[in-house]
Length: 125
Image (cartoon, rainbow, N blue to C red; front, top):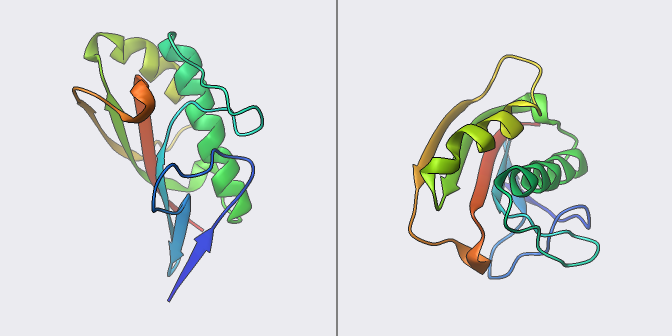
């Protein structure tokens, strides 16, 4: 059995997918980009500002599901320029207090809405 999570605290999906799905004791959060859920504006250009907005969007979904950032067990990060890794990593890391999740970071040629970073997570509910 699965439960679909929808919140106004994160951008609406741009395709046929859910913001997140709970199955068992895990929540699977779809890839989030740096779109402001209130204004609909994109945060673009600065990798640290983009990463911050992405993590805020992820937090919004997790809170709606009754979870939190510290419950993330696995993160997948897609970037269009690995030269931005250190700056992205600094901002990403600031959202955790320790006991970091498992993670992979990969460079891709392009992302939806031409963003520079997209992050998906799996967390405990």
